[in-house]
Length: 260
Ligand SMILES: Nc1ncnc2c1ncn2[C@@H]1O[C@H](COP(=O)(O)OP(=O)(O)OP(=O)(O)O)[C@@H](O)[C@H]1O
Image 1: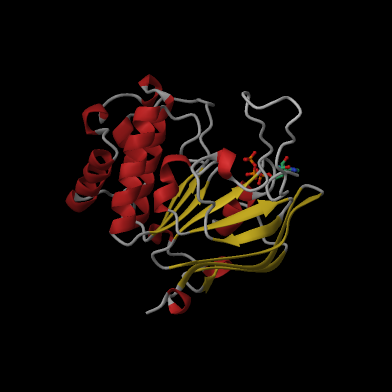
Image 2: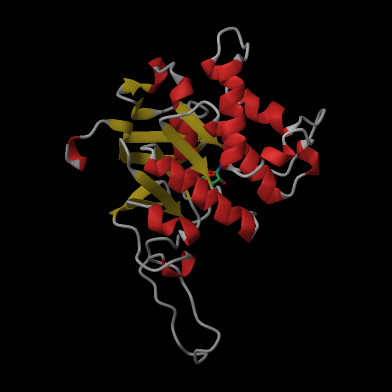
């Protein structure tokens, strides 16, 4: 089957979304087909997180259509097929859970009545192994570094063995060692055929995995096609950048894709 005819796992058509009085998405189209790895790029505030949150039902669709696996989002119930890693916040509260508890919570969608059986525990252990956190299974998540915490959140998303993985800025605030582990984890998922939508600020170490980039600006899609060639934010179209070793009067290149 050619890319064009594969099942659309994610489909947004003319989606508008409002937050408070503000229209944040102004009619965006986004298709991710089975097995694709798509990066959603754009400047701060361009609407990337809102687009993802619209998909998973945390933000209402004000106009247009959103569908997952061909099912209109409002009727979609099969959440075990979707792994979601939210943007990491540093806010901590309540009783700290252990690493295993957090990852197990990602498996609940596959259980009946929330009871974990042998196969579920095995899936949780596999997910921890994948992100290199098996030796921290019993630790409190409070004791982890930012990068380790992110690896636990990704293990939670992988615990349900999802067909679609959606990650919001998975590399943000993550140390280099964890970034490499995450890139490796993602590569393993992609090789196994998982469909992936990544919200990214820069392509960074994930660049080789990405098939297509969709760039948002001010709630609109301004690019949908091959990812920018070179690695990193500096290579993104529209990044205003002056190298420190360049003469002071060198004008930054502005293509306007990412800048607001
Ligand atoms: N509750 C809210 N009410 C009104 N506006 C909001 C609300 N939450 C977010 N916004 C605004 O919506 C816009 C889009 O936010 P969103 O988080 O989707 O952007 P983003 O592209 O993911 O940016 P970032 O990279 O900073 O996460 C931002 O300008 C933000 O300030």
